[in-house]
Length: 343
Image (cartoon, rainbow, N blue to C red; front, side, top):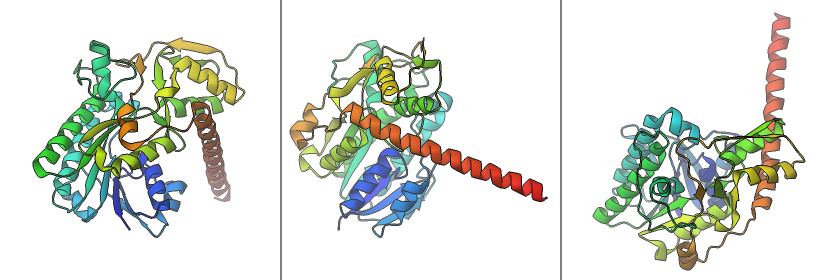
């Protein structure tokens, strides 16, 4: 049974990756400090499986990696502070955590007798290039990466991922281990949290927000459903042909403008609000869509889930999650009320 470590294992991609690997029979260790990920019912159920081990571990702390053990066949390094709100509100934390955690993991990795590392980078690394010089759409992996404005707090995340790519590449060059860098493009699905556009839209639709504000209505993104992203990640990790490669993971066939995304989601939930259009957030890019031809050539990967199908699954999951949260809140308030009356 192959042994796998997933840092950031309580997060969105980490949880779904761990679940897929466990179901395939791998022995999986999930490492997370629960800063953004959470020990909800889904993760708790996964951790009950006999081939799963959970570590509550802050990888920025000195000697934290001593908890990880040794001898993993595959290490997926997904741990990072993500979410657009954090880029603007605490860019110094984004940079510190993302760079320091990776540095500590790399120092551990080269001593721990492990096999291959997959480093999760992001489509955000293309943003500065797109704003300053333009990029081809769909965008291939070999375009130059640019930090176009160091005063833009949004670039804290993109900058941390650029540094991360440099760290992984040069550690691997120095110590001779196999690795792949993947740049995830707008992955979405159940259990994502609400710091991204699709789950934000889900929550606001479920709350029947009217008028419905849309920021950067004419900006486009190519969304990739989580099941496709996980399958691509496994293919990349377990294919020797991807060693020392940088690969986009996404779905170039589902590029859509934000206003059209909102309209489609309104249709799916029979909701017809008035719409208020606002400018895009500072530092956002007009279009984002990956070229995945290299990924397809090396692994045979092709996305299978249409945007409509993925959105239905995501909306239904969020509807259940909101209902559960409301029921728990009502139960908690009822208990407090009863306690006050009894006193």
